Length: 407
Image (cartoon, rainbow, N blue to C red; front, top):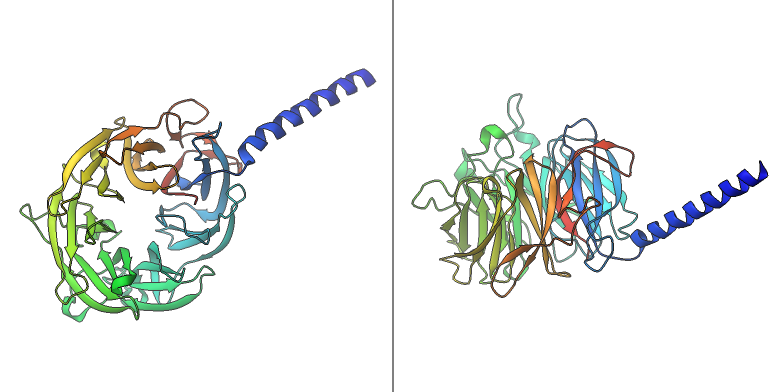
């Protein structure tokens, strides 16, 4: 009996050493990808998945840990687009109207620092951009003042919040010159040197999704709304519909992706007469979150199962220089750039197989290649969120949305 116990003790000790050894590989200081994830079936809760994003790591592409929340999944949606210096990452479940602030300074042991819902009379936060002072400027889609029994209203606002979820200031998107227009702020870009903010108006409500056709210019110093303007219809009278993601280009112009797969170029935002021009239309409709790297714009085109790269050196005449197609079951949506490793991540939309891929961008010619070294335990390129057991004790298919690299 003693011999059996001794043998068992040796086995347990050896197993413990092996597990510690394996764990040490994953807990060594490194580079991480934070994937904001919900239950694809909407029975479980939202959680943050941490994935090894260090190409030199032997566990590159493997799941490191997860951090569950108490929020039952309704619609896991936006995070910040890049990791802030503070390491306090904002992420929302949009339909729940709730935002979490994650402390991810220690990527191996992320924590929930705070959460919030309605702020300063506004509800349904959507996008987050950092101000020079480190605070976050948040777009809120709707205003309490306009809420009705059958409608969330046509206007929202911008709210400045610090990392402790304290409101600093706010401003309404309502414009008396556009009384009947849909003015629900979607996303924004901040231009400190011009004392400007440019926001887009697009609805997250299915019944209003095609009503957004405007953008707004604000003065950053006091959040005064300076201008509401229509986007250029172009020759197809369609490409301007549902403007979503504004990005500043290398030429200083603001490039706006639309859900209708148009690319609008806005100039003169520091003047009384800003101008929008539809400079490109991607084939098909339903385009997702773009990324600009140098003079290349990388666009996810959902129904083509592809990423398309445009050269925007001449901003008025973008030129396609490359594209990469995924399997038909993968519908790309969110993209994000990693300065540290020179890679782009793309996550799936709410359709098809839930997952993400890592790609390399050739910054000389704009070509994209799949990083096959980034893979999960199954050895297949990418990370599969479908039907797996997660470290926090839940089993099921996760649905990722916003994904952000550590600094």
